[in-house]
Length: 456
Ligand code: NAD
Image (cartoon, rainbow, N blue to C red; front, side, top):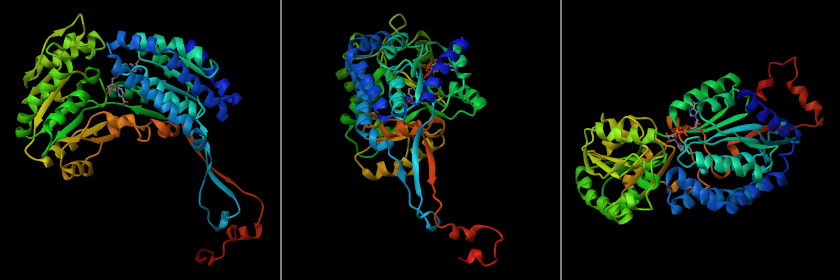
């Protein structure tokens, strides 16, 4: 296993050393090929996503296909300017020199993806890595095997096999792969696996980007259009059956807002998925038996009051959209990221209490505030920290390639999307090209140092 992956990495390293990935034209052609790969095979890709998670076509196109295509367009439109040297201001001693930041690829990089957006989470970082001129090993998640197979089949058909490779497998294969020296590791997944990735990366002092998760709060406070808030909350929570790293994990609101919100939440659920969500083609399934059991156990153990529930069906890996109220701070639902179709609603007596609640926990990947009052939105924005922030909606901030996507602290290190992906896979080399002019001026810095030199 290890020698196999070593052969792959060695081949890519030889290609990187040959300089083939450096010209803009090469990067451009590979990005264009990646675009063709997705467009030519969209049906096959959507089928695989349906097999893995029963993703509704609309959600799959929006969150797996289009998000990658948009980032490709953005990269192709901006690549030339991203690659330009960035000249910096100079001082008297360097007045006649060329001083600039040169953006260089890192080398051979490893991208490890998670299962919830199994296409997007490997291809979107890959755009930044290709644009920056790297060779890339992709390791899609084995938990979404159909998409893993499609990626492994299509990438070698469309992209240079000398420069890009896909390695499939689970934890053991990934550990074997990680024993190789990489120039960067880009990991998307859970916090617990991230810790072991960091330990392995420490052996070679390999820099790491971590795209992790956590519990994303949604504060609903003050004056608010309850019907619209419910629609946006329910859409972003139950998109992909709640299996989104940026899904609102729980709601914080006053008891009065909760009471007004609940009928609107029930109405939105029925409007979106009908009376029997299991029969709706627009509601995804849980990815695996393990995750299905984990979520059902949470529902068995919560001491909260379940106000919206439905059937759970193991064979179909189905869990109905579920809403729980009267959830205490130390309830099992508040221990870890839920990552499924269960929405706890907790009450707060004041906005300050909500802000304290958030600040007492790890910094989340995303933080949402729903309110008609801009003072409420600004108070939360200014007094908290999170990877991303969006007011009066969920998830949408991650669709803009101009905004960096990533966490802070325990929700992740580093960012990508658009230029941020290019920068993640780039070394910013400080370059000073000096000539031989004005050597007499240099006399000022050579010893023996006269006492009055520093007064210059
Ligand atoms: P997962 O089980 O698919 O694991 C992620 C990757 O790690 C896989 O490729 C897997 O093969 C590999 N892996 C698993 N165990 C390993 C080990 N012991 N050593 C090395 N590699 C190993 O996905 P997951 O971890 O269940 O992912 C869910 C988590 O990912 C959630 O916390 C979610 O919030 C987070 N997530 C974050 C983002 C983001 O962009 N920040 C996106 C999606 C998911």
